[in-house]
Length: 579
Image 1 (cartoon, helix red, strand yellow):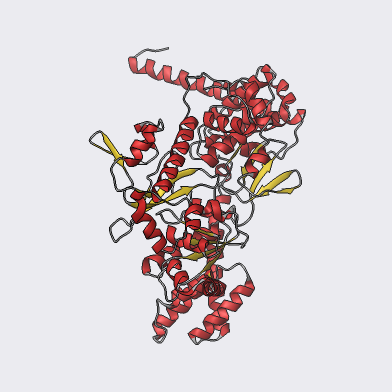
Image 2 (cartoon, one colour):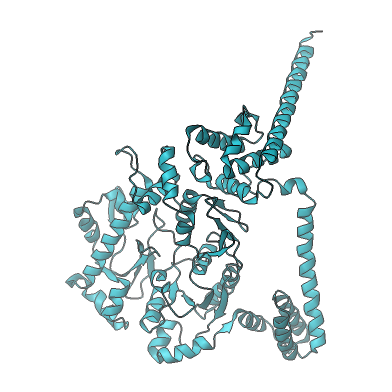
């Protein structure tokens, strides 16, 4: 639905973009702008900027951008109307809408409330006669009642409809139970998804219950059953126990594979542990972790599957700007078992001895080769050189190079030459990629999104100038006179121009955040236009842009008329007409 421009104007005023973004990103001021690590992609250096005076955010790395409404759409996965409602709720504003209108956001609120009620139900059942077996299992696994309370752990009774019946009594519909992933459906009938399992509520960083993980108490399979993907639960974007771990004072986060490991670590004083939700580590997970720490300790199982997962996770975490350490479990299969066997003090020693990712990867390479054989020794040294060549510091390259030279039984000079060769080859490859980009200047000014393309680059550059100048100094829009959206070569830029002119005519503040009807790719592109504006914001520049647009529009008109005339003559000739 369309919101009144005056309402959007007030909404934006009452939700300063730096305050809203600051809830998700640690921002630091630099001049007139603020910078932080991008929440939408992994990075080591802060390329995500917020310009409070312009009311926009923009990432110079992944090129996402927009106003405060678009930020909420992107970060929370909301539609435009629901992002507006979320910000209105934040600011205590009343939404001017038809009472019959049922939004996605309202549906989300119902699912959040339902999931919270379900968590209460499961927790209550743990201490009821139906949960006697579950409580005994939890206590047998060394989880005191204080831990059960901290994590809100519960029990799903071994029945087909206990939860369904309880939630129906509270007014929730069968469709809402389905949408929350709490029930399964077969033959038109629903039944409880979780039965006879210890239940772990999955709580996001805002404190909402968004899903569940259920663990069996015997050797049956699957050992863990998670909620399916729903409107409120995305396992690629959430981590178990991060709502608690984000408050840690330890200065790092521990990433483990299972709920029980995370719970055990918290129980023994390591309140920085989180676990993935039945999926491999994703870039979204890494970006989420980077909001709360700059160092992650990986503790995956010691079997081959766990080690593969470790090797895969390291570059994902580093890409997000995180320092990575790897802890290899000794005399136990996982942290839960180790802590119960040896206690917190010995685990702390393990943590202190955790190797950094370079040592871990070098050790992994060493395990692949038998360096007593010359051919394998050569391959070992070459692969190590490739890895060391990627290190940014010359000191690091020398230290690790010396170590491998000694292990491989060669001189450091020879190792240094091998690393230098690998380093130069990598730089050469990167240079070729950059040269390819540099040799395509027209392509370089094309929008990065594949869904947006400029047919007339010269006109489009001027159109970008008009929009950037108009958004920064709306008074300059008066110079546009009878310039129409149809004069723009880019349909997207024409739509932007039309909306900002309408805002000006209505006396509403011209602002990027008031634009409606644009998808996230389009808004990122528009924000990038404003962010990149480096030329003068003045009358002369605006007039030059307008003149270019008019001239290019006239060329296109003449070209179109010539094409139509040629087509008409061709048709006449085909019919045998003359003259």
